[in-house]
Figure: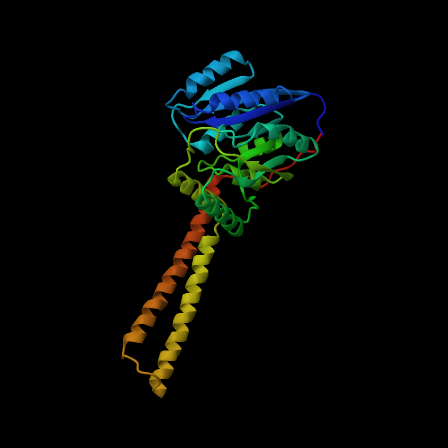
Length: 313
């Protein structure tokens, strides 16, 4: 439990959000101005916007001393923009949220309450996803469940990057220098006390999503590759299964030749089984090589071996 005033940092990335920037900042500032015993710093990361987003943000920064604009030199992407904001935040607690009002600012008091009750991470879980197609809802649900099955890290399903993090969690993230970042997975990986906060996600206030199918696939791939090596072990297991089938098939061919079972085309079955056998051998060795590469990949990410948690004050 923290005593005294709390410094809350709010990080929000923006890329070409001129249609929703004003409305988002009006609602956000209205909510944070009502927070008791809390000082606020608002960090808006302008991720190389090519529209009027920068002008709107500069206007807000001139009016509010607690609002800072971090302007990136180009569009580096959502995860990089979040990282820039989180690494620049100085608060006792940091909240990351999108700027399209699908992450409602009115949840901030509830997040802070959970933090004051002992949670180090409060992640927002979407009960409903209004305004999204059945295809997007279905693929998102399937992906999160596949990721949870494949990963040793318990990454919560139906969540985005909307979450509260304590200073300790932020410092743990700062110790992870990997470049292909999947922030929601990294936050889950560091551990600490993590609690959900359920909400109904609204439609975008204006404009269209900036996450194209290509970007969604790239983000999803980063999540699987960054937190799971199970596909490599599946490749090895598949190789052994195929090898077993080939071995049983070879026994059947030999017995059929000896006892005259069926109408075998001479040479065809044996050639097919030999090809299957050596394909299985290749699959096994590719999987083994992949596992070694996975270990090299893990070393290059340079994640800490452990994180020591300090007692809450």
